[in-house]
Image 1 (cartoon, rainbow, N blue to C red):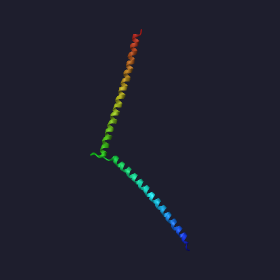
Image 2 (image 1 turned 135 degrees about the vertical axis):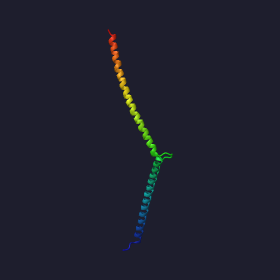
Image 3 (image 1 turned 120 degrees about the vertical axis):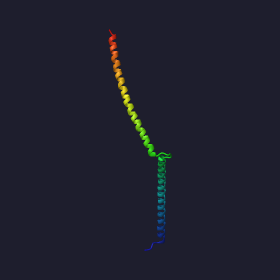
Image 4 (image 1 turned 45 degrees about the horizontal axis):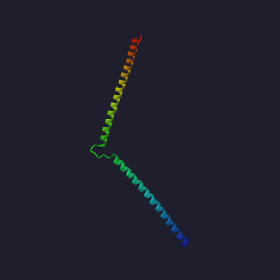
Length: 111
């Protein structure tokens, strides 16, 4: 079975158009992938820059020192809370004693 030359030309032309369209789609997909990879590389580099340590101490040692300092601050805060509670108890006791003295004085001065 042989095809007429005009049908052969149409098939070759259609095949060429389809091939060109597929190549265009593939090029666009590769371009998008490249852009996505470039963005990932950029974010990865930024993340690396954020944790880079350009001085002589180790980052882990720095963190350990900060955590130790924070523990000391929390211990001091607990101690201060206890001290404040003690002062409040003392003030409440003084207030009760002062009111008792005031009542006795009022009772003594009133005929």
